[in-house]
Length: 235
Image 1: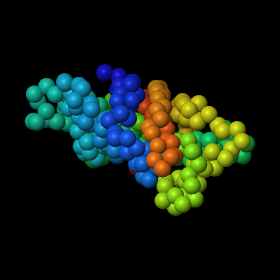
Image 2: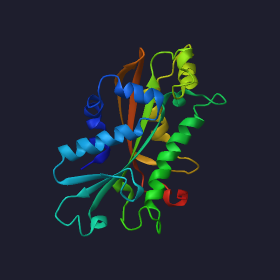
Image 3: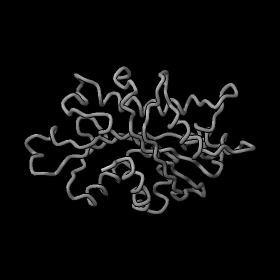
């Protein structure tokens, strides 16, 4: 199964599994990666019969196991895939620095996805050495929160990234965040000569509103390029 595409295709169902205003509220007041990760785990377990999806196995966000009768005795040998989630503000991708198409905060978020893959690949670690995973067995998921309405002053100290969201909305020509996010993930090399990801899949959904502030979520699922030096980046 091609997990980046499965994650992206399932996203509307994940969104619709939340109650009205729930995901908008969670996205405004905290990073929503945990609630979204929880829904993915639950829905995937319901929808795919020959796999078992377990959260936080060996400190991984979501581990996919083959369900073939041998899981209880040797779980490490039945791992099919690992999915790691990260969340942040999509408006970080609107920043321009020194007049160039380079976004430091965006690179920081992408770097965290890269680090997740790197640390899950590291030899001799408590993360991945017993699982014998390759780059194709790891999917990174970035959840980017975009706020569509200005956050009122009474909420600016209470909602996550309020000033960042409001600065983005105040631009005379608002950047196309969807386009920029795809470009940054597609082009990311860090300090290396090859791109980090072979696959960059994207989906965006409006998830409702809270206190009349509408929220949109960008979901990006990536698969690493085996030529990128992930091993060198592991802690």
